[in-house]
Image 1 (cartoon, rainbow, N blue to C red):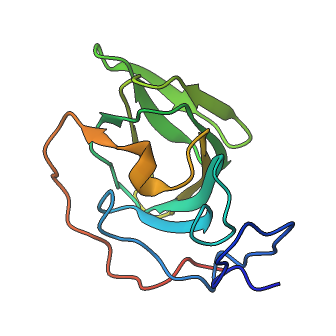
Image 2 (cartoon, helix red, strand yellow):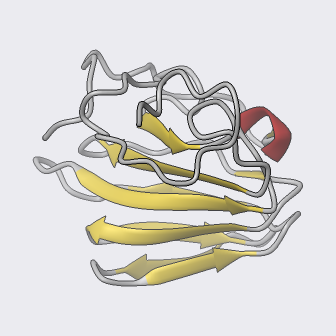
Image 3 (cartoon, rainbow, N blue to C red):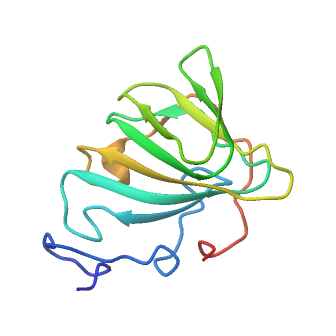
Length: 150
C-alpha cells in the first residue's frame, strides 16, 4: 500500500522516513518528516513523525492543543518544560510526555552530532490540527538539508 496518496483510511502502511520529504519551516532548524497522519494514512487519531535536531539546534518553546510524546532515538537532548523552563537532560532511550497546553522546547547540546527523536500527537490527525502555538520568536534559520538522513 502506498502511504503517499492515501485518500481514505488505510488498514496498514509502511512509510520510509528517508523517502517522504522534509518540513524545515515548521520548527527551524529542526528537520521533520511527517510519517503517519491524515494525509498519509487517512487516520483521524494520531500524528507521528521523525525529527533531526542539528548540532546546537534549538526550537522555539511552544505548546499544542493535543498531548505530545517523543522518544529520544539519539541524544542526549536538553528539554525545557513548563512556563518556568524546567530543564532536563534527556538521554537516548527515554520517552517524554507533554500534556495538551504544556509549554516545551528542546536543544541539541552536541557541537558535532545530530540528535534525533520520534514524536506523536495524540488524538490529533495532523500537524495543522495540533495547532502549535509558539511562545518565543523564531531565532534560528532552517537547516539546508533536503532529506532525513538514513
